[in-house]
Length: 373
Length: 199
Image (cartoon, rainbow over all chains, first blue to last red; front, side, top):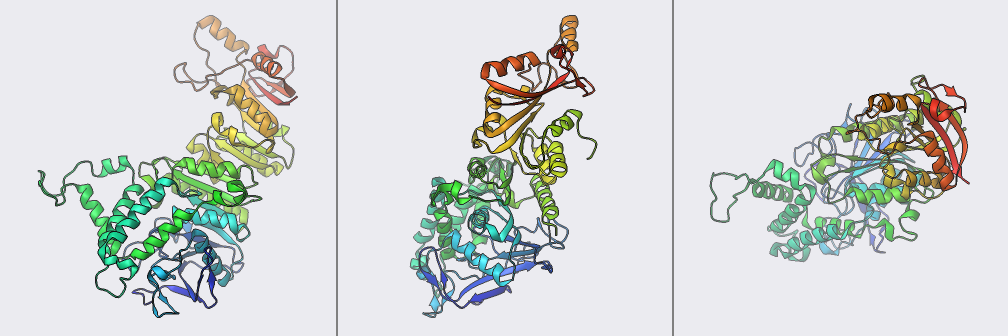
């Protein structure tokens, strides 16, 4: 796949086996690293991105020319200090920023996968990340950190690869996708598939891309990332241009304009099919459905956890995290948990939330002493 | 950090043996837990309601969950800890009876400390002024106090009798935090520390 930007990449020549039983040949993982790996290789932090995130968590994103999605937290002298840590962030399997996904050319056919790409899971994404740290010669991560879908990945790390990580920081996430969350994702997928330019996923060669459908999917999803009170505070019933209603269907309200902007800017950087695959992976995620339930998922676990939730997050409410903590109480894990007061909804984990940042910094400091780096 | 541990907390820490697994309920800023972790190599967990308290604890490298002892103790399995500590908190609980029974369910023993409402100065103040008593352990006004279930030493020992809870050890302290004898404890003691378990 030709990319419009530079990123680090590793290609695995052998076939990569998926949870579904299918395999991917020549699987590629695109990633960015920040800071220096120390001699002992003990200072590596894996950052897991959310549904529409990418590997550019710090510095300037070369595609959007904007700050990386977690630049507020990651960088020299910041909470996740790249003067101390070697930060790794990879594009998830199924993504569209360089890792193998539906927009990648299938080496067998010479054509882009489209819907021939196998359905992937959160577990598959993490398995590829594990291969990445193996390739980088890292035996054990200092920490794995992520919010939302990134948080699901951190839980997968804790459940399946507990020997390869010391500390786990799941933020604004859950051990499973709820019925409501699946419902919102399905509306998004239906919006994409209803776009006539989608053409059952075979739009890569054509000029017309299913931008309308993807924009609508993004608009719906974006509402779930905010809170009612944040929307009211930010936009209220304010009108966009005039003092009076237009009495037609152009944009009247500021909130309409905002959502349209969110939709149209998103389609410039994201692939519709990737959106289908990644939302599906999130919907499939349920640690409690595995053998022995949630308690078994963290059995004999002695990792250090620091969970964060936000009071106004209705997409991943605090009660979900409390359920995880309940089952962690039966293991030997060292668990910290904070519910941060915020009216910014699910998106709070990406924003300037001093309380959240302060506690996260404190936990990391404690881990530096404990792990002795 | 070394010497600023409250006197009653210091006495509690002396009751803890090395290498125990301890749960501190209402652990505040985590001073007791971090003291136990450093001095006695105790495996520590904490529950704290206030966010500022949890912040301080997490910053100290402690494993602390933001939660409410009234409800969240139900989530812990039996015998998960050797000792559960409830210092200066029982009188602010909505269901003190439920909390105490939970403590001795999830831990082999519970250490509970509280201000003694039978203390002679409290009796005197109420008797002479006719106003709700206040002191350094009970600094609030009647209308804003979180202390909704105050009790005397006698109330507590009666409760243990009634519920079949075994009192293993007790310490009665004066206002300076010094250990008083057993004599007229409900009259003389400013606060009390009890170590209890199932019979």
